[in-house]
Image (cartoon, rainbow, N blue to C red; front, side):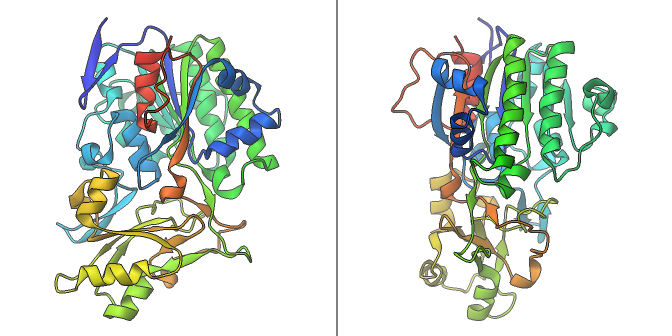
Length: 406
């Protein structure tokens, strides 16, 4: 059987239409609650007759590093995308990691297209499109800017006509529904050999598992997955990260402002705190997540600062650069001198004055730390030997759908 090798892993070319879905922010309990409530009949059948495990995403449990891990089959130490945002130390500037220049490894999607497969990618937000579509000869567009898709740049035009939906608001469940609707229409009209669908976590940031709005979202998703199944697709559903409430008992955000704390200890501006959750869409999380990196002056006793940070209530881990890179499989040249994670209910900020929380219209829910690492990995096919003792990762998704689908 023909196969491709990408980043040290071998993949068979698809024998049937193969779809991987990354459901942004899908804490496994969302599926459990929706299935229990009768909102996901297709998923209930798949859990009984297919294959399902709880897997680990990569840390930091943010969107960009995990989506790129899924499509490269490798951790950030290989592909280089270690957050949505980083400090470019060489140029002394803080930048978004949306440009493919930051990518250090090829994607499986591009390799499959080069091997002759028809490949389609639909992502909710445009911030991921160029990374996911790097080197890809195929269809790749975002729901956010579907009206701007062209044959030359995106491999497709007239997307709104195809999907028969208007461009959705970026802060809405409709953005993710557009992704699913587009995926079904592409499968009906173009029948790609491989398709990758990536949603947004707007709903998960606002609504806990089992709430009416969450169940509505998962009911919608279930219907589109059932439609893809009916079209003969092998489907793997996973997530880029989970999601948790990040609040005190009075429902206010439980934040440790690291920049303010370090400025108090060292003097203003001596340390630099980077929050890799930062992206252009901060209304629903205020750029607050449970993972941060800290750059310190060379003359500072890093071990002493690490010890003081560890003593703060709500801090889970403080690791020096080398240890963090090894433990979390991160590129050591793209993280700070220290990596800091917050406990389950705690988020990390820079300086309080830099965070606008006025857009939060519900108690804060966010991600980034170890508490959001567990994610679903589900396929609508049986795996003969799912290796129950193995540590599965969300970036095993394409291995499942291409190599293990019965």
